[in-house]
Length: 421
Image (tube, rainbow, N blue to C red):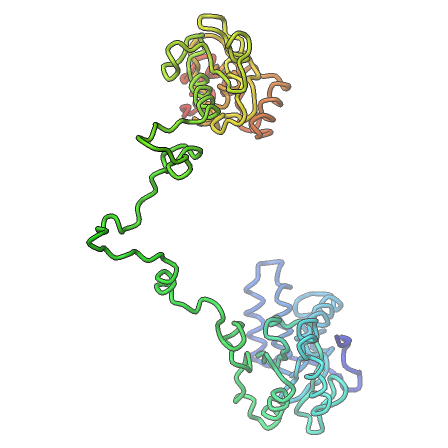
């Protein structure tokens, strides 16, 4: 990276002024910015001054600072920061900016610098004998994929070799710079893979044909209906019992058994959705007194936490067998005692859907009044079990439930100004 300093005083002009056309352009450019923000035009004005003179002199920087009402040091900071601003006189036909950042350096930028040192001058910013060419090393110019690269004027030249660099310098020196195509100098499209595409070589239709399994043709022995791929037959069956995984047996195939764990989970979900009045749901066996677990019966055949028929409910959800894939709250037990009577529609609380309602019921929460009276300790337990910390407070469950418990949907409408969902 070259040092960014102004040119020696011996070559600095005494004054600078925009041409009439550029002065009018500068005033129009400044007017594009809001009142109090006109100093944002500093970069466009510096660039126009450089295009007019070929480089930025001290007098040009001072003149633009005065025009924008800026401190001279602030404009100098901008001019010395961006390497596109040339602080010394440069070649009249080309000034070469060589990218020296790591990608270009690894790909041969030092060789390009050697070419410029031999063909132009050993030192940066120094003119060749004819005064037509100069060079400098700069930081990244933004085409790392096509390294190494240089910039001349407003164009970049990429994927360079020392030989191609010499050809470009000769072309600009002789006034034929327009004959050089900007961009990559090898066979590639922009920044695509060198030498052409290496992926996605097959058209989409061909790709589908290549990877789609062939359908065997129909034969007299195998009709077309049999030859075509059959739809999956086990999609609606339990994953642990399918025609493919069931053991081979002789004679008529017996009806597939659902695992005891899965059956236990289904009965537990049905019990949670039922009224907590000690009576079994119709989805359960007529003579059921609670969900039984394959892990063993407790308390005379009654599952832990389940009351016998007609007895007061101490726990509205059954202890789940492990593993239970359909358990609304995997591995959890009731946190509260579900009150007797029909369950309230917890889905009227904004933020509670059918699935979440079933999970709350499984925790023993079936009434609006329960939600309205949750303590901080109970809230922490519910949110920890359901893994959504902060949601009860964020969605204002307690306030919603209190309104519903007080006067139902009419009270909710009065308090919140909208119907509950």
